[in-house]
Length: 295
Figure 1 (cartoon, helix red, strand yellow):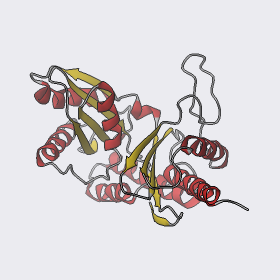
Figure 2 (cartoon, one colour; figure 1 turned 90 degrees about the vertical axis):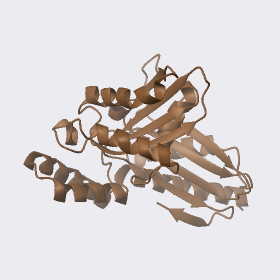
Figure 3 (cartoon, one colour; figure 1 turned 180 degrees about the vertical axis):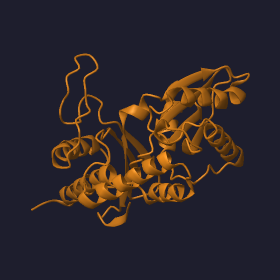
Figure 4 (spheres, helix red, strand yellow; figure 1 turned 120 degrees about the vertical axis):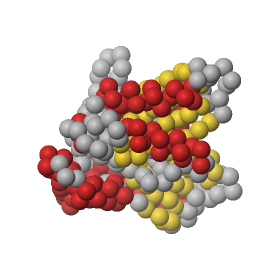
């Protein structure tokens, strides 16, 4: 007879596999709605054609449950683990097993390559991969897992800047504008931009990627940070890069900034670029394995 822990692990595996499939084949409703509005507002025939193809791709991927993009990316896992949840230590094994199965069953393109030998594991798992972040939530008995597939094209534009603290706050919006202007159509615009402001070199990049977990249209809770988000978004939309680099008024869908205290001698800015095909899925269960939400 299976123990409660074994039953709970099986529930997590099933939900993980469903969520990976959903993340790879289904776009969030707010992204789809954005492009539907954009299609109605666009007066350029070439751009309108591109938007229509994007929307058709979204619809077809969901209908037949196939990947929205041939680059199924690196699967990033963000775990919010209640300190009273019964399982606390076996998530790497659980995730590795599910990712291997999903690679064959969905299928996923194998994107796990050794940086020294260039050997592809053909399983999407390997040393320190896929990336897993675990945050312990006090006084909670729930488990929440968010899955963010991250394609290589947009990821290649990502950057860490170590600015002079004297003028870092003033300079970083200009540097980001230069970065995106130089990238042009490479990251498959319109893009979503995650920015980590402050912290140290590693933390600013972690914050930048976590910023992408925030739904589009939701600004930072701090008014001064929200104003920076809008300022950078408006600046990027003046670049005339447009849909897939073909020109137009929308280069950036949204900008999300997360902040952290920094050392007085340094001003780190992490920038993570996400393509228009912003794939993300999540679920949350309680300690009994009962589903709280699935998205």
